[in-house]
Length: 247
Image 1 (cartoon, rainbow, N blue to C red):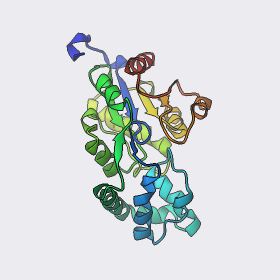
Image 2 (image 1 turned 60 degrees about the vertical axis):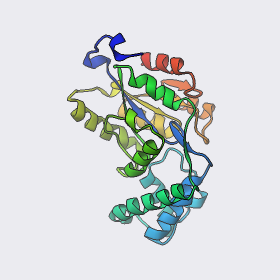
Image 3 (image 1 turned 45 degrees about the horizontal axis):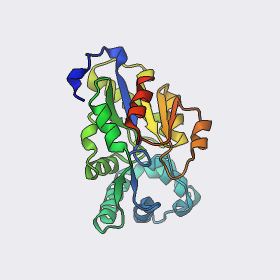
Image 4 (image 1 turned 90 degrees about the vertical axis):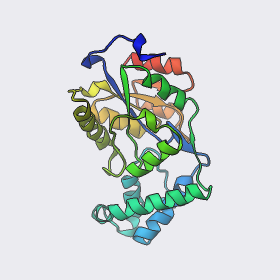
């Protein structure tokens, strides 16, 4: 379907899709590979990985993961912030090493590419990343999976806050400036697979579509958080578009 089949839209009809990444659009071929490179990263930068090996990190920002993992070692938020540059550099080094030796394989979630293609053709929707990944890791993941072309707007990332609830406002401010449009919070739709995705949308005042595609949270877990819409996956693209159209 081409754009010329749609009538031009005014500002109030525009919807910005804020996409989560891991568990929603991409995932590691093997569960737990995230820790294969983040544990060595923390050991390199801070001398310890703390409790990371035992943590469930789904839906958290990378800064929050680091803070919670290292709290038991007395390493504070201030210490982490002071070493953020080293943290990001070592993170990407270890991630690229894991990708290069085949230890970490990133694959596109079923239906994700088709869903992105469908909204990319529709003038009502524009897409941005809203992910707990540090920014260079997020860009690397969408580049190696050939999804980068769908994200034409600035987003918000896990190296910008210890609290995921801060990210939608950061992304919205950048997108408003980028488009030169005064967009209301309700014109943003968060799409993600965890309760934290739903919580960050609610905190900002955005709409939220939860998808039960992650490895941790069940459809009942997500339903209990009362998203605006709940889908089992992204395989039914027509259903996905109908869901967005109703928001």
